[in-house]
Every structure is written in C-alpha cells, then in structure tokens.
Length: 291
Image 1: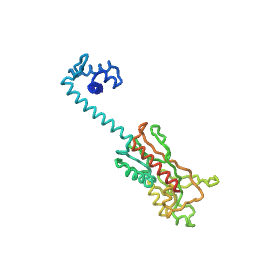
Image 2: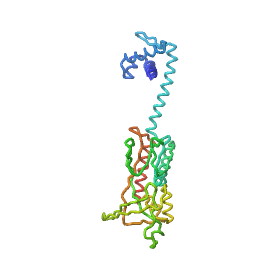
Image 3: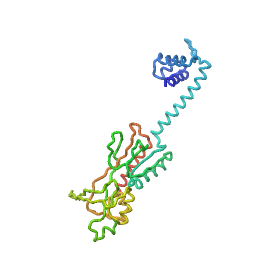
Image 4: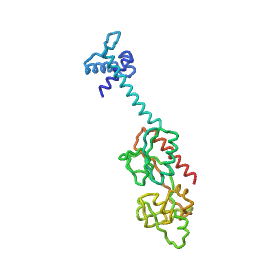
C-alpha cells in the first residue's frame, strides 16, 4: 500500500510540475511530498527526478516509471468511478427474495416495469415462504411480512395488507358443513387462531385445527379454490379470486399485516436496491388503494 501511495504522489509531482505545486493540490505539506519522493527513489534504487533550485527534470528512468504510474492512476480512477456509479445508476445483479403470495402480484410485475426503464439491471427473483439468511445466501433485498429481529438487518416498512379467511362459493353455500376443514401453510402450525373485529370493535376469536397443510402458499390456495376447505390469503390475492372465493366472515376483519423491505447495506445503498424498494412500495400502495 505504501508503494502505491508513493507512486501516486510521484505522478502528482510530475503532473503539477514541482513538489510545491503537488503539495498544494494534494493538500499536504511540502516536506511530506518530498519525503514520499525520497522514499520511493530509495526503495527503487534509482533517481527519478533531477532537482535543482530552479528546475526539476525527469530522468530516463523517471519518464518510464511515470508512464507506469499514469496507467495505474487511470485504472484506479476507472475503478473508483465504476464503484460510485452503482450508487447513482440502477444496474448490475440484484437478488430479491419474497414470499410466494407477494411474488406474482407485487414483486414480479414491479421488476418487469423497472427492466423497461433500467435495462442494465440483472434481477434474480427467489420466491419462497421460508425466510432465507440474507448474508449466507447473498440476498440483496428481502421483502417480508413482519419485521426482522436481527440487529444487523436494515429494514423499512413499505406496505400493508389484511388476511381474508375464505373458501370456495360452493363450500360456503353448503349448509350441511358445520365447520369446514382448515387449510394452513406449514409456518402457521397445526393449531390456528384468528382474532376478528367488527365495525363496532367487537371481537370474535376463531380457532381451528389445520387438518390439511402445505408448505407453499399456492398449494394452499389451490386447495381452497377446489373446495377442500377454508384458509387465509392476502386481500390483494383475494381480490383477484373473487369469481371463485367468498369470505367466511364478510362483516369482520383481521388485523393489518405490515410488509418490510430488508437489506444489509449501511449508508451507501446501491441505486439498484433503492429503486426497487421505491417501486415495490408504490405497487403496494396501488394495490391498497384499489380495494
């Protein structure tokens, strides 16, 4: 690292025309700049600049060495600008994970629109109801229901939804069914409990044993749609399924669920992640307003 620093100071001396001018441009003292040059020549074992009271002249070795230093400076400047570009222009790979229920209606359509605007983005979408470790799986952005308890995760609330307890029209219109089979996602567990509220604030506690479970949202949705039983799905999913499904308790509502955007970046959030979070938040607002 010291060698690179010496070389950088040397190139500034050559380009500025003197040690004094180089010291001014680098905002260093003249003695510090002179020391860099002295140490560089000592380590190389060659004289790079012939110095007199009036004039500094590059030796032949100094001219050749300067060309190498200039090439290194160009590479350094290019790498610096390229790295800075990731914070200003949405581009490059970005891995996004989200629950199945959010992927097809929220995430995928949002990313599709962003690709039309920012064709240099290279998204990888991972859909799943299990929560992946962001660092271990190189996840740039996770969209999740509920906040994370991890202290090393940066998170922001970007939206909300309500679950709807629903079943097929035919199932709910069948007067012979006392209590329909409850269909649960594996993460819900076998014993399910819901707290409903009516318009006046009265509460209804509903409990059920999940006799049918699946580890995928879409498997649960397919079972509900086919009339196997009832289960909860997000309101924005329910709105697309109204031709097939009805609410079990249409006069009651479940609590609001918050949606969070999570990442592991500190102060310098890449533009690719920032633009995705903003667009996903906008999509969630649109869905909420369309109810």
